[in-house]
Length: 416
Image 1: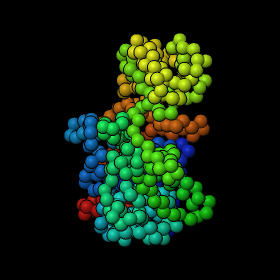
Image 2: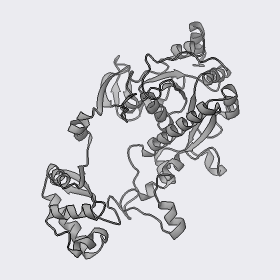
Image 3: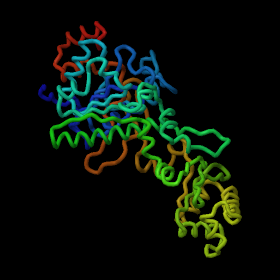
Protein backbone atom coordinates (compact mmCIF):
# COMPACT_ATOMS: atom_id res chain seq x y z
CA UNK A 1 0.00 0.00 0.00
CA UNK A 2 1.31 3.46 -0.92
CA UNK A 3 2.44 5.90 1.74
CA UNK A 4 -0.08 8.60 2.43
CA UNK A 5 0.65 11.77 0.44
CA UNK A 6 0.22 15.22 2.02
CA UNK A 7 -3.20 16.84 2.18
CA UNK A 8 -4.53 18.71 -0.83
CA UNK A 9 -6.45 21.14 1.37
CA UNK A 10 -5.07 24.68 1.45
CA UNK A 11 -5.65 24.69 5.21
CA UNK A 12 -6.89 22.27 7.85
CA UNK A 13 -10.15 23.02 9.65
CA UNK A 14 -13.19 21.37 11.14
CA UNK A 15 -13.74 18.16 13.11
CA UNK A 16 -13.06 15.95 10.05
CA UNK A 17 -9.70 17.42 9.12
CA UNK A 18 -7.34 14.70 7.97
CA UNK A 19 -10.13 12.42 6.68
CA UNK A 20 -9.92 11.76 2.94
CA UNK A 21 -13.09 10.63 1.13
CA UNK A 22 -13.36 9.32 -2.42
CA UNK A 23 -16.89 9.90 -3.75
CA UNK A 24 -17.88 8.25 -7.04
CA UNK A 25 -21.68 8.53 -7.01
CA UNK A 26 -23.95 10.82 -9.00
CA UNK A 27 -27.04 12.93 -8.40
CA UNK A 28 -28.03 13.48 -4.80
CA UNK A 29 -27.92 11.03 -1.91
CA UNK A 30 -24.36 9.71 -1.76
CA UNK A 31 -22.56 12.80 -3.09
CA UNK A 32 -24.45 14.97 -0.60
CA UNK A 33 -23.07 12.81 2.23
CA UNK A 34 -19.56 13.55 0.97
CA UNK A 35 -20.40 17.25 0.56
CA UNK A 36 -21.51 17.48 4.21
CA UNK A 37 -18.20 15.94 5.24
CA UNK A 38 -16.35 18.47 3.08
CA UNK A 39 -18.02 21.32 4.93
CA UNK A 40 -16.60 19.88 8.15
CA UNK A 41 -13.04 19.76 6.87
CA UNK A 42 -12.81 16.35 5.19
CA UNK A 43 -10.80 16.23 1.97
CA UNK A 44 -13.38 15.08 -0.58
CA UNK A 45 -12.49 13.93 -4.09
CA UNK A 46 -15.60 13.77 -6.26
CA UNK A 47 -15.31 11.61 -9.37
CA UNK A 48 -17.43 12.35 -12.45
CA UNK A 49 -17.65 11.02 -15.99
CA UNK A 50 -15.08 12.41 -18.42
CA UNK A 51 -16.50 15.18 -20.57
CA UNK A 52 -20.04 15.59 -19.30
CA UNK A 53 -19.56 15.05 -15.58
CA UNK A 54 -22.65 14.53 -13.43
CA UNK A 55 -24.68 16.21 -16.16
CA UNK A 56 -28.12 15.73 -14.61
CA UNK A 57 -27.34 17.29 -11.24
CA UNK A 58 -25.07 20.01 -12.64
CA UNK A 59 -27.92 21.32 -14.79
CA UNK A 60 -31.19 20.16 -13.18
CA UNK A 61 -33.73 22.86 -12.28
CA UNK A 62 -33.07 26.58 -11.95
CA UNK A 63 -29.62 27.60 -13.24
CA UNK A 64 -27.30 30.60 -13.00
CA UNK A 65 -25.07 31.77 -15.87
CA UNK A 66 -21.35 31.12 -15.60
CA UNK A 67 -18.89 34.00 -15.33
CA UNK A 68 -17.68 33.49 -18.89
CA UNK A 69 -21.23 33.56 -20.24
CA UNK A 70 -20.74 30.23 -22.00
CA UNK A 71 -22.85 28.01 -19.81
CA UNK A 72 -25.14 27.62 -16.84
CA UNK A 73 -24.95 25.81 -13.50
CA UNK A 74 -27.83 24.53 -11.37
CA UNK A 75 -28.39 26.33 -8.09
CA UNK A 76 -28.52 22.93 -6.35
CA UNK A 77 -25.02 22.12 -7.61
CA UNK A 78 -23.73 25.50 -6.45
CA UNK A 79 -25.17 24.92 -2.97
CA UNK A 80 -24.20 21.26 -2.58
CA UNK A 81 -20.84 20.85 -4.29
CA UNK A 82 -18.67 23.24 -2.31
CA UNK A 83 -15.23 22.41 -0.86
CA UNK A 84 -14.73 19.44 -3.19
CA UNK A 85 -11.91 18.40 -5.50
CA UNK A 86 -13.59 17.39 -8.76
CA UNK A 87 -11.91 14.92 -11.09
CA UNK A 88 -13.01 12.71 -13.98
CA UNK A 89 -12.42 8.99 -14.52
CA UNK A 90 -13.67 6.23 -16.83
CA UNK A 91 -14.01 3.03 -14.79
CA UNK A 92 -14.63 0.91 -17.88
CA UNK A 93 -11.02 1.38 -19.02
CA UNK A 94 -8.16 -0.67 -17.52
CA UNK A 95 -6.12 2.51 -16.94
CA UNK A 96 -9.12 4.06 -15.21
CA UNK A 97 -9.54 1.11 -12.87
CA UNK A 98 -5.88 1.21 -11.90
CA UNK A 99 -6.06 4.95 -11.21
CA UNK A 100 -9.11 4.31 -9.04
CA UNK A 101 -7.26 1.67 -7.01
CA UNK A 102 -4.30 4.00 -6.55
CA UNK A 103 -6.71 6.58 -5.14
CA UNK A 104 -8.20 3.91 -2.90
CA UNK A 105 -4.75 3.33 -1.42
CA UNK A 106 -4.54 6.90 -0.11
CA UNK A 107 -8.15 7.43 1.01
CA UNK A 108 -9.98 6.58 4.24
CA UNK A 109 -13.54 6.22 2.93
CA UNK A 110 -14.95 5.32 -0.47
CA UNK A 111 -18.60 6.28 -1.04
CA UNK A 112 -20.45 5.18 -4.17
CA UNK A 113 -24.01 4.94 -5.49
CA UNK A 114 -24.91 2.44 -8.18
CA UNK A 115 -26.95 -0.66 -8.86
CA UNK A 116 -25.47 -3.77 -7.24
CA UNK A 117 -22.93 -5.43 -9.49
CA UNK A 118 -21.79 -2.24 -11.22
CA UNK A 119 -18.26 -2.18 -9.79
CA UNK A 120 -17.77 -5.96 -9.65
CA UNK A 121 -18.36 -6.15 -13.42
CA UNK A 122 -15.24 -4.00 -13.76
CA UNK A 123 -13.35 -6.29 -11.40
CA UNK A 124 -13.62 -3.79 -8.55
CA UNK A 125 -15.12 -6.02 -5.88
CA UNK A 126 -15.02 -5.12 -2.20
CA UNK A 127 -12.37 -7.81 -1.73
CA UNK A 128 -10.15 -6.21 -4.39
CA UNK A 129 -10.58 -2.75 -2.88
CA UNK A 130 -9.88 -3.96 0.67
CA UNK A 131 -6.83 -5.82 -0.56
CA UNK A 132 -5.40 -2.54 -1.86
CA UNK A 133 -6.33 -0.71 1.35
CA UNK A 134 -7.30 -2.95 4.30
CA UNK A 135 -8.38 0.05 6.40
CA UNK A 136 -10.73 1.66 3.89
CA UNK A 137 -14.42 2.01 4.66
CA UNK A 138 -16.67 1.29 1.66
CA UNK A 139 -20.14 2.83 1.65
CA UNK A 140 -22.47 1.40 -0.99
CA UNK A 141 -25.62 3.49 -1.51
CA UNK A 142 -28.45 2.05 -3.60
CA UNK A 143 -32.20 2.11 -3.80
CA UNK A 144 -32.89 -1.42 -2.64
CA UNK A 145 -29.58 -2.61 -1.14
CA UNK A 146 -26.80 -4.94 -2.18
CA UNK A 147 -28.63 -8.11 -1.14
CA UNK A 148 -32.24 -9.26 -0.98
CA UNK A 149 -34.86 -10.47 -3.43
CA UNK A 150 -33.29 -10.70 -6.89
CA UNK A 151 -36.29 -9.02 -8.55
CA UNK A 152 -35.56 -5.81 -6.65
CA UNK A 153 -31.80 -5.41 -6.72
CA UNK A 154 -31.52 -4.15 -10.29
CA UNK A 155 -34.38 -1.67 -10.06
CA UNK A 156 -33.79 2.05 -10.43
CA UNK A 157 -34.68 4.27 -7.51
CA UNK A 158 -35.00 8.00 -7.15
CA UNK A 159 -36.18 10.18 -4.29
CA UNK A 160 -39.91 9.60 -4.73
CA UNK A 161 -39.39 5.87 -5.25
CA UNK A 162 -37.58 5.67 -1.91
CA UNK A 163 -40.34 7.61 -0.18
CA UNK A 164 -43.01 5.34 -1.63
CA UNK A 165 -41.28 1.99 -1.09
CA UNK A 166 -39.96 2.98 2.34
CA UNK A 167 -43.45 3.82 3.61
CA UNK A 168 -43.14 7.57 4.14
CA UNK A 169 -45.28 8.67 1.22
CA UNK A 170 -48.29 6.62 2.33
CA UNK A 171 -48.41 8.71 5.51
CA UNK A 172 -47.67 12.09 3.92
CA UNK A 173 -50.55 14.30 2.78
CA UNK A 174 -54.24 14.49 3.55
CA UNK A 175 -56.69 11.58 3.89
CA UNK A 176 -58.33 9.82 0.96
CA UNK A 177 -59.46 10.69 -1.64
CA UNK A 178 -56.49 13.08 -1.77
CA UNK A 179 -53.38 11.35 -3.18
CA UNK A 180 -50.24 10.61 -1.16
CA UNK A 181 -47.74 13.46 -1.34
CA UNK A 182 -43.95 13.27 -1.52
CA UNK A 183 -41.99 15.34 0.97
CA UNK A 184 -39.98 18.12 -0.69
CA UNK A 185 -37.25 18.70 -1.67
CA UNK A 186 -35.60 15.32 -2.30
CA UNK A 187 -36.25 14.24 1.28
CA UNK A 188 -35.49 10.55 0.75
CA UNK A 189 -32.16 11.39 -0.86
CA UNK A 190 -31.11 13.77 1.89
CA UNK A 191 -32.12 11.32 4.63
CA UNK A 192 -30.15 8.59 2.86
CA UNK A 193 -27.16 10.95 2.72
CA UNK A 194 -27.27 11.36 6.49
CA UNK A 195 -27.35 7.58 6.95
CA UNK A 196 -24.44 7.26 4.55
CA UNK A 197 -22.35 9.85 6.39
CA UNK A 198 -22.93 8.69 9.95
CA UNK A 199 -22.37 5.03 9.07
CA UNK A 200 -19.21 5.84 7.10
CA UNK A 201 -17.80 7.76 10.03
CA UNK A 202 -18.75 4.94 12.41
CA UNK A 203 -16.85 2.55 10.14
CA UNK A 204 -13.93 4.98 10.02
CA UNK A 205 -13.72 5.12 13.82
CA UNK A 206 -13.66 1.32 13.96
CA UNK A 207 -10.99 1.14 11.26
CA UNK A 208 -8.80 3.63 13.10
CA UNK A 209 -9.13 1.59 16.27
CA UNK A 210 -8.62 -1.87 14.76
CA UNK A 211 -6.95 -1.38 11.38
CA UNK A 212 -9.84 -3.20 9.70
CA UNK A 213 -11.96 -1.62 6.99
CA UNK A 214 -15.33 -2.95 5.90
CA UNK A 215 -18.22 -2.47 3.48
CA UNK A 216 -21.51 -0.81 4.44
CA UNK A 217 -24.77 -1.55 2.62
CA UNK A 218 -27.02 1.56 2.70
CA UNK A 219 -30.38 1.21 0.99
CA UNK A 220 -32.52 4.27 0.41
CA UNK A 221 -35.78 2.56 1.32
CA UNK A 222 -34.39 1.30 4.65
CA UNK A 223 -33.13 4.76 5.58
CA UNK A 224 -36.66 6.06 5.06
CA UNK A 225 -38.29 3.06 6.70
CA UNK A 226 -36.11 3.51 9.77
CA UNK A 227 -37.77 6.88 10.47
CA UNK A 228 -41.40 5.70 10.62
CA UNK A 229 -41.63 5.76 14.41
CA UNK A 230 -43.91 3.00 15.76
CA UNK A 231 -45.54 2.27 12.41
CA UNK A 232 -44.38 -1.33 12.08
CA UNK A 233 -44.72 -2.21 15.78
CA UNK A 234 -48.35 -1.09 15.52
CA UNK A 235 -48.87 -3.27 12.48
CA UNK A 236 -47.17 -6.42 13.77
CA UNK A 237 -48.70 -6.11 17.25
CA UNK A 238 -52.16 -4.74 16.45
CA UNK A 239 -52.66 -5.06 12.71
CA UNK A 240 -52.99 -1.28 12.61
CA UNK A 241 -52.01 0.56 9.40
CA UNK A 242 -51.11 4.23 9.77
CA UNK A 243 -52.69 6.43 7.12
CA UNK A 244 -52.53 10.05 6.11
CA UNK A 245 -53.92 12.62 8.53
CA UNK A 246 -52.70 15.85 7.00
CA UNK A 247 -50.92 18.23 9.34
CA UNK A 248 -53.24 17.52 12.24
CA UNK A 249 -52.16 15.22 15.06
CA UNK A 250 -54.62 12.39 15.67
CA UNK A 251 -54.27 11.95 19.44
CA UNK A 252 -54.34 15.52 20.78
CA UNK A 253 -54.78 19.15 19.78
CA UNK A 254 -53.85 21.74 18.81
CA UNK A 255 -51.09 20.44 16.56
CA UNK A 256 -51.83 21.66 13.07
CA UNK A 257 -51.39 24.39 10.48
CA UNK A 258 -53.74 27.37 10.75
CA UNK A 259 -54.48 30.25 8.39
CA UNK A 260 -54.06 33.76 9.73
CA UNK A 261 -55.01 37.01 8.01
CA UNK A 262 -51.80 37.20 6.00
CA UNK A 263 -50.29 33.74 5.99
CA UNK A 264 -49.99 30.40 7.75
CA UNK A 265 -48.78 29.40 11.20
CA UNK A 266 -48.30 26.12 13.04
CA UNK A 267 -49.32 25.68 16.66
CA UNK A 268 -48.28 22.72 18.79
CA UNK A 269 -49.51 22.01 22.30
CA UNK A 270 -48.06 18.73 23.56
CA UNK A 271 -49.39 17.89 27.01
CA UNK A 272 -52.21 19.25 29.15
CA UNK A 273 -50.20 22.10 30.74
CA UNK A 274 -49.44 23.58 27.31
CA UNK A 275 -53.02 23.02 26.18
CA UNK A 276 -54.15 24.97 29.24
CA UNK A 277 -52.02 27.90 28.12
CA UNK A 278 -53.70 27.86 24.73
CA UNK A 279 -57.07 27.94 26.48
CA UNK A 280 -56.04 31.03 28.44
CA UNK A 281 -54.90 32.78 25.25
CA UNK A 282 -58.36 32.06 23.77
CA UNK A 283 -60.17 33.19 26.94
CA UNK A 284 -61.36 29.67 27.78
CA UNK A 285 -61.32 28.07 31.25
CA UNK A 286 -58.68 25.30 31.16
CA UNK A 287 -60.26 23.67 34.24
CA UNK A 288 -63.53 23.13 32.43
CA UNK A 289 -63.90 19.37 31.78
CA UNK A 290 -65.29 20.20 28.37
CA UNK A 291 -61.97 21.63 27.19
CA UNK A 292 -59.94 18.92 28.92
CA UNK A 293 -61.94 16.45 26.85
CA UNK A 294 -61.30 18.51 23.73
CA UNK A 295 -57.55 18.23 24.20
CA UNK A 296 -57.32 14.48 23.54
CA UNK A 297 -60.71 13.60 22.02
CA UNK A 298 -60.35 15.76 18.96
CA UNK A 299 -63.35 14.29 17.13
CA UNK A 300 -65.78 14.80 19.99
CA UNK A 301 -68.27 17.69 19.97
CA UNK A 302 -66.03 19.55 22.41
CA UNK A 303 -62.95 18.78 20.30
CA UNK A 304 -64.57 20.06 17.12
CA UNK A 305 -65.78 23.19 18.91
CA UNK A 306 -62.34 23.93 20.33
CA UNK A 307 -60.75 23.58 16.90
CA UNK A 308 -63.31 25.98 15.42
CA UNK A 309 -62.71 28.55 18.18
CA UNK A 310 -58.95 28.40 17.69
CA UNK A 311 -59.19 28.68 13.91
CA UNK A 312 -61.51 31.65 14.21
CA UNK A 313 -59.20 33.37 16.68
CA UNK A 314 -56.17 32.89 14.41
CA UNK A 315 -58.07 33.93 11.26
CA UNK A 316 -58.84 37.32 12.83
CA UNK A 317 -55.14 38.08 13.45
CA UNK A 318 -51.95 38.50 11.49
CA UNK A 319 -49.19 35.91 11.55
CA UNK A 320 -47.07 38.24 13.68
CA UNK A 321 -49.85 38.75 16.21
CA UNK A 322 -50.54 35.03 16.53
CA UNK A 323 -46.88 34.09 16.87
CA UNK A 324 -46.22 36.76 19.50
CA UNK A 325 -49.31 35.90 21.54
CA UNK A 326 -48.69 32.16 21.55
CA UNK A 327 -44.99 32.38 22.32
CA UNK A 328 -45.67 34.91 25.07
CA UNK A 329 -47.85 32.20 26.63
CA UNK A 330 -45.07 29.61 26.11
CA UNK A 331 -47.00 27.78 23.41
CA UNK A 332 -44.96 26.47 20.48
CA UNK A 333 -45.91 28.50 17.42
CA UNK A 334 -44.14 29.81 14.35
CA UNK A 335 -44.89 30.98 10.82
CA UNK A 336 -44.67 28.60 7.89
CA UNK A 337 -41.65 30.20 6.25
CA UNK A 338 -40.87 30.74 2.58
CA UNK A 339 -37.51 31.78 1.08
CA UNK A 340 -38.14 35.51 1.60
CA UNK A 341 -39.28 34.97 5.17
CA UNK A 342 -36.16 33.00 6.04
CA UNK A 343 -33.83 35.47 4.35
CA UNK A 344 -35.30 38.38 6.34
CA UNK A 345 -35.88 36.65 9.68
CA UNK A 346 -33.80 38.16 12.53
CA UNK A 347 -33.01 34.77 14.09
CA UNK A 348 -31.65 33.39 10.83
CA UNK A 349 -29.58 36.56 10.53
CA UNK A 350 -28.34 36.47 14.11
CA UNK A 351 -27.10 32.91 13.70
CA UNK A 352 -25.49 33.63 10.34
CA UNK A 353 -27.40 30.85 8.61
CA UNK A 354 -26.96 32.44 5.18
CA UNK A 355 -23.50 33.33 3.95
CA UNK A 356 -21.76 34.59 0.83
CA UNK A 357 -18.98 32.69 -0.93
CA UNK A 358 -17.12 32.79 -4.22
CA UNK A 359 -18.21 30.10 -6.64
CA UNK A 360 -15.54 29.15 -9.17
CA UNK A 361 -18.12 28.97 -11.94
CA UNK A 362 -20.66 31.74 -11.40
CA UNK A 363 -18.92 34.19 -9.06
CA UNK A 364 -20.20 35.52 -5.73
CA UNK A 365 -23.34 33.82 -4.45
CA UNK A 366 -25.30 33.70 -1.23
CA UNK A 367 -26.97 30.64 0.22
CA UNK A 368 -27.05 28.33 3.22
CA UNK A 369 -23.91 28.12 5.31
CA UNK A 370 -22.54 25.31 7.47
CA UNK A 371 -24.43 23.46 10.18
CA UNK A 372 -24.23 22.32 12.92
CA UNK A 373 -22.02 24.79 14.77
CA UNK A 374 -18.89 23.43 16.48
CA UNK A 375 -17.35 25.50 19.29
CA UNK A 376 -13.71 24.40 18.78
CA UNK A 377 -13.52 23.07 15.21
CA UNK A 378 -16.13 24.88 13.11
CA UNK A 379 -16.74 23.95 9.51
CA UNK A 380 -16.30 26.49 6.74
CA UNK A 381 -16.61 27.06 3.01
CA UNK A 382 -13.17 27.51 1.49
CA UNK A 383 -14.17 27.10 -2.15
CA UNK A 384 -17.33 27.00 -4.23
CA UNK A 385 -18.25 24.47 -6.90
CA UNK A 386 -15.91 23.92 -9.84
CA UNK A 387 -16.18 22.85 -13.50
CA UNK A 388 -15.93 19.23 -14.65
CA UNK A 389 -12.42 17.85 -14.18
CA UNK A 390 -11.16 21.06 -12.58
CA UNK A 391 -8.80 19.25 -10.19
CA UNK A 392 -7.55 16.45 -12.45
CA UNK A 393 -3.97 17.65 -12.52
CA UNK A 394 -3.84 18.45 -8.79
CA UNK A 395 -5.25 15.10 -7.67
CA UNK A 396 -3.53 12.82 -10.14
CA UNK A 397 -0.10 14.40 -9.74
CA UNK A 398 -0.10 14.94 -5.98
CA UNK A 399 -2.01 11.87 -4.82
CA UNK A 400 -1.30 9.29 -7.51
CA UNK A 401 2.13 10.48 -8.62
CA UNK A 402 1.47 11.00 -12.32
CA UNK A 403 3.40 13.56 -14.29
CA UNK A 404 1.63 16.44 -15.99
CA UNK A 405 2.44 14.84 -19.32
CA UNK A 406 0.76 11.60 -18.22
CA UNK A 407 -2.33 13.52 -17.12
CA UNK A 408 -2.55 15.19 -20.53
CA UNK A 409 -2.12 11.85 -22.28
CA UNK A 410 -4.86 10.20 -20.21
CA UNK A 411 -7.18 13.09 -20.96
CA UNK A 412 -6.53 12.78 -24.68
CA UNK A 413 -7.31 9.06 -24.47
CA UNK A 414 -10.59 9.75 -22.65
CA UNK A 415 -9.56 7.91 -19.48
CA UNK A 416 -9.99 11.09 -17.42
